Amino acid sequence: MRYSQTLLPTLKETPAEAEVISHRLMLRAGFMRKLTAGVYSYLPYGWAAIRRVEAIVREEMNRAGALEMMMPMVQPADIWKESGRYEKYGPELLRFHDRHDRESCLGPTHEEVITDIIRRELHSYRDLPINLYQIQTKFRDEIRPRFGLMRGREFIMKDAYSFDVDDAGAEVSYRKMYDAYKRIFTRCGLEFRAVQADSGAIGGSFSHEFMVLADTGEDTIVVCKDCEYAANMEKAVVKVVAAEEDVALAELEKIETPGKRKVQAVCEFLDISPATLVKTLVYLADGEPVAVLLRGDREVEEVKLKNLLGVAEVEMAEDKKVFDATGVPTGYLGPVDIKIRVVADQEVAHLHNFVVGGNEKNYHLKNVNMGRDFEVEAVADLRQITTDDPCPECGGKLDLTEGIEVGHVFKLGTSYSESMQALFQDSDGQEKPFVMGCYGIGVSRVVAAAIEQNHDENGIVFPIPLAPYQVIILNLGLKDEAISTAAEKLYEELSAAGIDVLLDDRDERPGSKFKDADLLGIPYRVTVGKSFTKNKVFEIRNRRDGRTEELGPEQTVTTLIKQIQAAL
Image 1 (tube, rainbow, N blue to C red):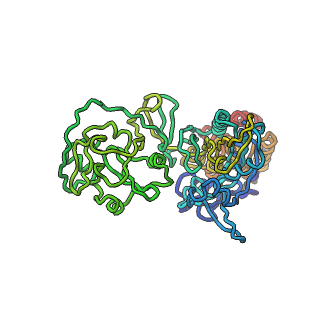
Image 2 (cartoon, one colour; image 1 turned 30 degrees about the horizontal axis):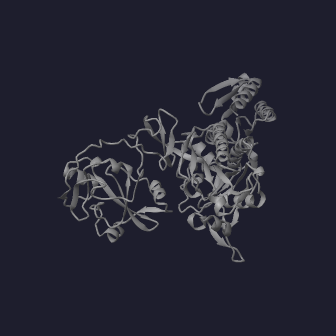
Image 3 (tube, rainbow, N blue to C red; image 1 turned 120 degrees about the vertical axis):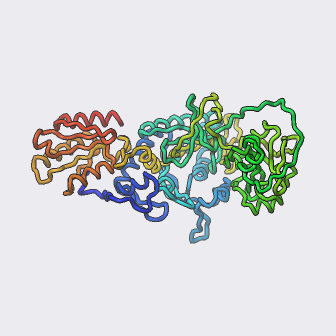
């Protein structure tokens, strides 16, 4: 492609709307332009990058035996009501009525649609297993769309759905997709980890997220330095290091703590460690107050709490709601004779003679013990893991790092097939629900994540497999016949060899061409200028490491073809 004939509007300044690195660079490099909040038009350069990802995804999905199809973006509300997700999914599901007053929604995902297709078309175990996928636009009405393609409302997604006769078959399908995802992100040239994850609104019993590692990632993931364990914060399992059990239980004691409401203030006043204080936090679980107990130096992991309680939403209660529910001001609440439900983090069950709020202003209780002084409804792993915790699998050292979710694989089980009566006849003639899995990749988000992981102060540094163009040729002598002829010949030879080339034939200053080449992140820059006039050589520059070399025309062609093909 000739630069003069494409739409590639680069910007020297960063637009005010841009927040994260990928958002800034994608706008500056002419990838996309904003239409409205969280919705973007992809310009030719950005669309070419997305198509690179699509091609890799499509090849690996086909290789894994999945079949491509296409489903409607507009979905009737009826099938969402059948699955039970129409209300549960929340405000991110954009609902509307058509001219006949029929309820519909814009698809954020397609479990209901694919289940409806399969229940109509497949009826026997002989039809299974099957895995169907599509690459399609999705819409989720995010309350605060931000970060460009990282958290937009409209985005491009690959979603696949497997159907099996039993759990063993579903495990095989899941593993095929897990392995395919590893190949996909490896081929994209990304540094990533597969982490155990919470299934969220999709549902199901088990899932993995595929996270691109980047300092600017919005998700924190837990990785072990000594084994392959990795999980997101919501799913990371805390391995309890049990305290000494043979401890004499001291007598309960009420002590005055005037004005001491915060953990640190109470600990300083009583000269104790936060590890020996149990705080009582009140959450609203689908609107109902629940007290949560955990050590004073720990934080609640809200997804773990939500899963324990089996509710759609939990949020910390405001001070007024705490007082209305308990009659106790915030800071002095404790589990002894409390008026609301109580659940405890598992660590609390191993503590002895700890301090809690006294359920009375300006008072705390000392030497409190669970089981003797109060009971709880449930004990579970409810807290955020820390780097001081041991790896739950090998006991090794944990590290926290930032990541960007680009893919997610789920074991759905029979939740959708049972609720939607999607049944098949097994080998014994019995009707059974299909065992399902679903597998998503944020195609447009992969491009943004790749830029977050691959950039420098001058712009994007594309991995070769994702680069819209693999080579950019800078013609620095438009009025010099020898230079222009050499640049054109190089362009034609590389293009004929299947290399995607951008020929910068604009009448611009050399400095502008160099800056745009760096901004665009094209892996190889070939400069045709004074060196060719003097010595008949081109200057080849590697965008990633900055190394340059001078080669003659024939060597340039063979070298670039060899290096690019090796990276694809």
